[in-house]
Amino acid sequence: MKIEYRLFLWGTPLFVAAGIVYGFMTDWSEPVGFLGMPLVGGLVAMIGAYLALTARRIDARPEDDPNGNIEDAAGDQGVYAPWSWWPLAIAGSAAICFLGLAVGWWVFYIGFCVAVVALVGWVFEFSRGIHSH
Image 1 (cartoon, one colour):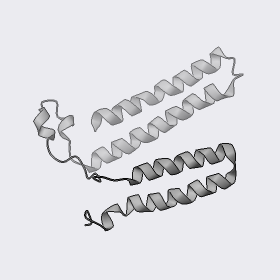
Image 2 (cartoon, one colour; image 1 turned 135 degrees about the horizontal axis):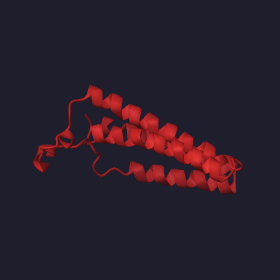
Image 3 (cartoon, helix red, strand yellow; image 1 turned 60 degrees about the horizontal axis):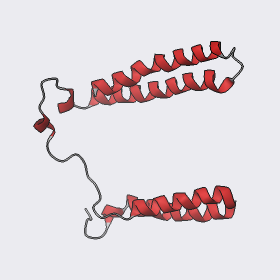
């Protein structure tokens, strides 16, 4: 994970410097740019710090070895839910929530209730049925 956290941590001064340059170019009259860009730099720094701390806790990955081969990373990459319909339900409930922002709050509340049910179904998908653990 060395390259990932270095990429993020090296991006931090870039955003901070871009915000300062933007502030000078606009005579500090437009607050979103000269405040927003350094804040993005802070967010990038937080992601980089998280990746750096995670890289210390886990072993080196095959991607971190400069002499590594493609087949070194072969095997399972994670646990994924086969034939899961819950992401579709979550996307539908998000669409209802966004529709509620345009139409009325009562529609948003309906979408929120559907989202809670869909999220609980997605989280507990492996607790029952054919793929239960």
